[in-house]
Image (cartoon, rainbow, N blue to C red; front, top):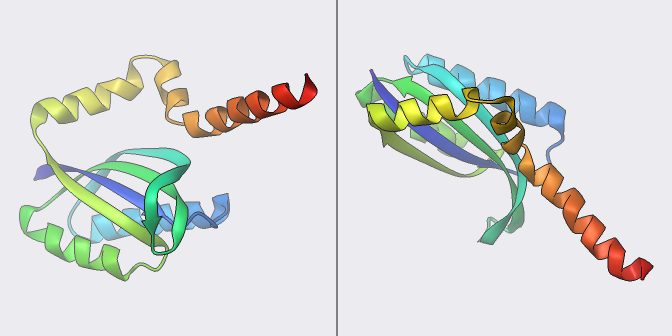
Length: 135
């Protein structure tokens, strides 16, 4: 079994409940293709560099998983059929990259909070915007 990283961008208009349903569906797809989810990171809603399928924003997911080498084309085909996905990328990881990724979230509790940074960044941006208005 090889290790992979899937970076997925979901439609930005999904609420938390729909995002969780999409995560369950993606996890089931990975398991269907003889894989196992090792780590899941929800990066939150972020602005895209350019419009993708008429969307300026997207909800990012980062999934570290295993899968059989011959199963990846089938997994990518099923990703393409999901209507909530606007973009995806599957990357092969070697052992060192996987170890670094797995240890990054477990070194301290702060790292896990940083994966939710987009929400905090949004709060900082609103504070910056409101500060000049208040002055």
